[in-house]
Image 1 (cartoon, rainbow, N blue to C red):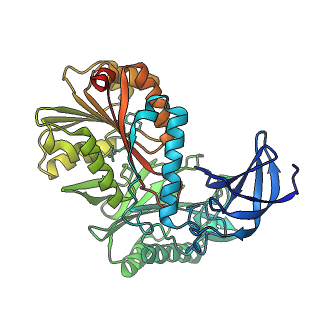
Image 2: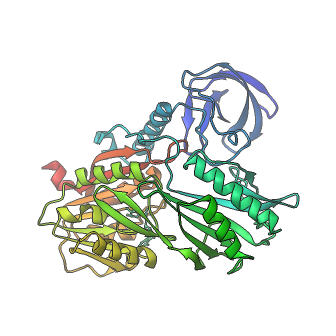
Image 3: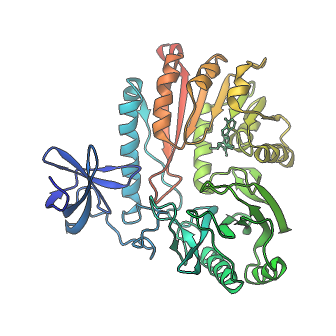
Length: 459
Ligand SMILES: C[S@@+](CC[C@H](N)C(=O)[O-])C[C@H]1O[C@@H](n2cnc3c(N)ncnc32)[C@H](O)[C@@H]1O
């Protein structure tokens, strides 16, 4: 098989997180984007890597029943936001579920084959579900642009007019406003290759339950020209605005870093409601982006944890209090451990504002906190780490506390499966796992697993 060759075949599988259909040809694997599982196609071989080929679909000869027209006009322009838009939502969930099962049985070891794996819970909404979006400013042919980066092109931007993942009416209005404002004031957009330019990011947080909008403008400078004028016009077009913050971000890295923040007007925090808890979340604190689906995650964590009134709960990677505060009324005491100071302050304030008096938040890295075993006996531990998952040291130290139940919430089934092996080495096995689709149109989803001491399982 060679680059430039064309062949006809049927897609035999689908690979995540790359979102590509898998073809087998002459004993080789060919990955092809924008093809649905089972579709019969004419494919052009475009490139060759060490162990696979990359293809482009020339013609779909037999369409999948689950193919749908992508609603977003920027999908075909290569906007990297959501790669699964051309598949009906139910099919997206089936693909993710199959992927999760494959990863668990490949990486998670023997136990995973015996575990009860529940069906994935779909998101209550497959579009307009996000409470947070981060767009980038840039320059194209001397003109300010505002949009999202195409997949694998960190320096490039698709100038977009709207986004279907957040309330569209709000996003189009704000993208148009900030693009026009920047152009009229002749402000430069940041070029990540040359590391030059004034405007970098537009951060929008929208709380549906409070019908409130908070905006952060990322810039290489601490102030922007005519801030008052901009605020005045913005408040006129967007009466739901509750806060406007300038975020200084001079970092050479691509991510939005909160080097310094300055509130021009209103609040630098917003509110989200999950169950009976009203969370205050600072601009830089973590909060799950799909509030309605996050409720399903917390409900599932609660169900698997089966908290008892005499139990002490240790909530590791606790963010703004999230899962720990949600469970607080069902246990005797909660201790949350979080390294981000803003998140920690939010968690403390959230305990007070929700009348929760059995919550303590500790500012510490989890690995450090666990280095000196706490005197309290925690029978229940929840862990909700970033995508990289836990590490061997954290798992070893956590196992030394001998909790009866560990509820592991993960946004990366690969790192979860790897960590399960370490847990097993330290006497813990997964007994249940469940999935919630927090991120429709994208390859990502959330897993909630219950781990218990191996002898409990045998008994
Ligand atoms: C996926 S979020 C979980 C948030 C929270 N459990 C919730 O329900 O919203 C992960 C959190 O871990 C924090 N974090 C990351 N690495 C950490 C570490 N080594 N020690 C403590 N906290 C950490 C991040 O700041 C973030 O708030």
